[in-house]
Structures are given as structure tokens and as C-alpha cells.
Length: 325
Image (cartoon, rainbow, N blue to C red; front, side):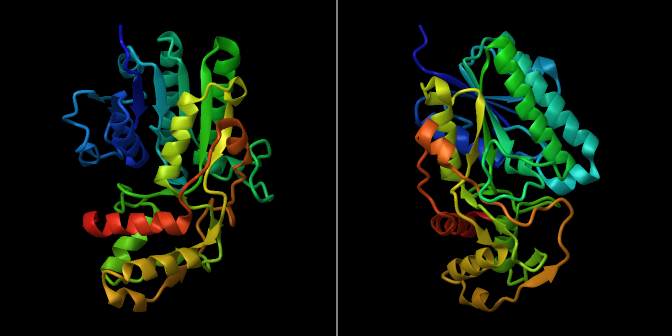
């Protein structure tokens, strides 16, 4: 009789996925990681790879057989696998759709057929699209502004149908600008915070899209891990088969973000305080402001985020300084 719960984490070699692998192995779960290493990295799994309760499957969610293999004997799924990035989806909408929609559907079907207990998936704040209201409330969305946003909204629609039609328990987590340890600073679609850190470390001027007054609900990785854990452990029936904002519930401008980065990095190299900032044109598909209401998650899941942007940045900067080369 198996006593340990088994988790499948798709995209488990990626930034968020590998942090989830680390956390749930430490909590005593058996963890299966499915990744094709398109954007994930084996070095992200260095703390997991030799763990007796860890299994790595190299496979692609676009292949139904890989999905079926990965779900065998699994209790819960944390579906993180996706092609992120608004600009990438604009330059290559077909591949983004294949991974984010067809791959997502493959995983839902595999989960249904394997009778997985619950399917928790990474949704996105991009689903709010051109909705003007702040803070963003789960039930009020606008029209998507990019192919990526369309794919993430379609995920929510598919999850809802699978809940209603097949009885698969689903929870979607709309991530807001997640940052923290293991986030990749390299490549054309690198996330802004590790990219800026790398530039500041090298005493190079970060380039902000626009005038720096666009604002975001920057969310530290440990808050996201907390939400994923609540999503797979909740016993509240009212908390199931819906979506939640996954954020801190505060917003900061890009100018404010860079000012904090310079302050915290200057502890390691005082010259960073004098690095100037460059500004460029706004980026296609970007929304001006993003701020999450986290009331629904607080009420139904008991969510209580521990890390503000500033607290998370201080931890992240320490990690980046040691690990980003």
C-alpha cells in the first residue's frame, strides 16, 4: 500500500517547475518530472536528480504517449510546461499554440484516463488582456492582447470543460510576474529581473521598455510554491474547478524595481549604484498596469503570501549574485 503521494510536475526543469520539485521532494512526496528541455535546464534539477523519490522523464507534452507514460501512478499534477513569453508568441504563434493548447489538452486527457485526483495548472495574468480595471478580479477579463494570452485563456476553458464533463478536479493559478532563484537570465525571451541583474553586475545599463512607469505585481517564487501546495491539499469543495490570481497583491513600477535592484546589488559592488538606466519603445502586447486581487485565494484557499517584492528581491538578489554567471 503506497503511503507517499506522487506528484507529476510538467516543465519540472524550468524556473518554477524546478523550485516545485525541490520543495515537494523535501516535503516527502514522490516527484515525477516531465520536461523536453526546450527552455528548462538539467542544472536546475541538481538537488533532485539523485533523490530516491525523484524520477525524470525526458518527453514532450505534444506527444500523447509521453503524457500517458508520465501520469502512470500519479496522484496530482502540477502542470507548468508551456512556452512562455508574449514576444515569442508574436514571432511564432504556431509553436506556442502547439505546446500551450495541444500539449495542455494531451495532459488533460492523460490525467482523465489515469484517474488523477487533481490537475493544477499554470494559468497567466495575460488572460486579463485589455481589461482596464484594477485590481484584476478573476471573474472580469478583457480581450487577449497576444497569441500567448489566447493560449492561456483556452487552457482555462478546457480545464473547465474537463471538470464539468469528466469530473476531473482542476485549479488554475494565474501567475503574475513571478521571479526568484533559478530564473534564467539568458536568451531572447529572458525574464526582466534576472536579465537586469546580469546587466547591473556587469555594470551595463538595463534597458526599460517605455518610460518605466508601467507597473506589475511582482511575485516571489515562494508565494507561488505556497499557492501550488494549497491547490493540491485543499479539501474545500468550493475551492475546486476555478482559477485564482497568484500574486502578492501590490504593484511596483519598472523604475521602482530597478531602483531596488541597484540598492540591493550595491551591497556586493558599490559601483552598481551609479549605473544609468536606458529607455526604449514600449513592447507590443504589453499591458500598462497589472495588479491582482488575492481576496478569492485568501477566502477559499487560505492563501497568505509571505514575501513582498522587496523581501523577495533581497533573497533573489543574494541567489543571483552567487549563481548567475
